Image (cartoon, rainbow over all chains, first blue to last red; front, top):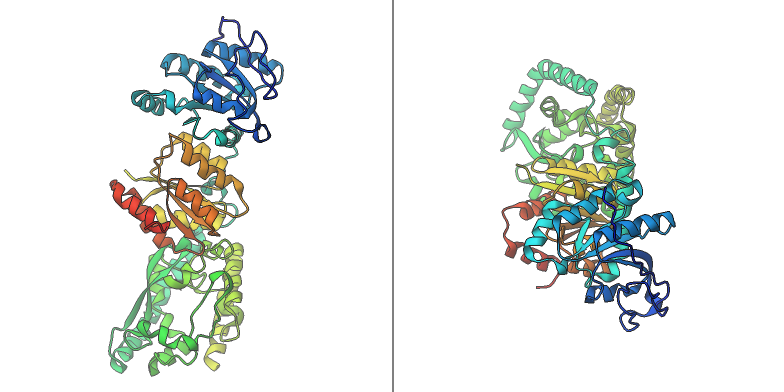
Length: 391
Length: 138
């Protein structure tokens, strides 16, 4: 710790027009024409420098200013001000860099709780290029700023730095990883085990059926057996989504032409879904697959790969998913994409479900997801499928 | 070594989406407010900053001004995500080191593209071109 031996000199000017005391080193004579009195900043600062520069003049906008020429003087002055309970809000250093002196001063500031939080702003204009890059490397100053240019932002800047230092000291940092308790952002172990067991068993058990469907799809219309598209899963992670093809090839390209058949209205805040009534792009066999939901079976491979879960939110095409990246709707992406989910079992087959209702159910699932909820959705899924196929 | 991105997003789920999308290519730290961002900026160096500015939140606007005036940080490109877009915001962005503005809702993959563009080997002309294009200066 360094305590200066030079007697401190104080320059504290409370009002712009009050003359400096005799034993005070003035920053400079108050110059009314720099900034009108009415616009003076309320905070106070300690200036370390010569006090005759243009920089110092611009600092007259502040009501309370303390001046010292050296770091030793500054140390003593700060101690005095602390004892008088008038610690300044920030420190401005306006002198060429003398590395050792400045480092010692900052070390001293860091040695006290009360002085640690004082923001130290170094005036950029007094530094040459070498000094500037050296100061950047040293990370001793809280900020390096052109004081003259950004004079009216100093108080705000100091407030930000001060609050951040206070917060960092109290260890209240709140990174995303540390707040996972709010909602599940990772697949729980039980869910992944459950997904693997169910999907693998289903693939093995249903493989003859999958084979028959594949043959019929291939035989009844031209094009590939499997329809692949890019979908957004948990956290908007993009994956290739598999389905049995139920439409004629290149059906996506005709989506705009049939926009008037969309059963969902454009949602508020940009949320939107697309589902066409009596979709003319669907093949005859495709219509059967859709009614029975057999077209969804290839998603078992997505589940096995880890792209999706058995239970989750519907994986949306990217253009739809992007419309939900808002403050209100993005919570749905906390949950994984799933083959079945809350909205499917809540109102499956009912065409009057609005896009807003679907989104709300998705968000509800994302917030409430648990083993019990997944189990309940899974139990209700066959009934929902049966109801749908009857419609 | 992966480039580092600092994201300041107060909405938890949006922060999660941004982190998930970018994490495949970048080392991403997400903090919920300007104070934590300041703390992160003193601890580490970042190649890019994503700053979410809310209409009601003055802290983030203050942080943007701080980034602009700080000699330590003014060379870090900033991408702004906002729930509004008015002349005041555009002016602040124009004065600052903001190279792109995304208005919510936005496509996270386009954000990823933007960050890729900014963190690629430095091509200042591209960054300036992008900034001018986004801020309608061309």
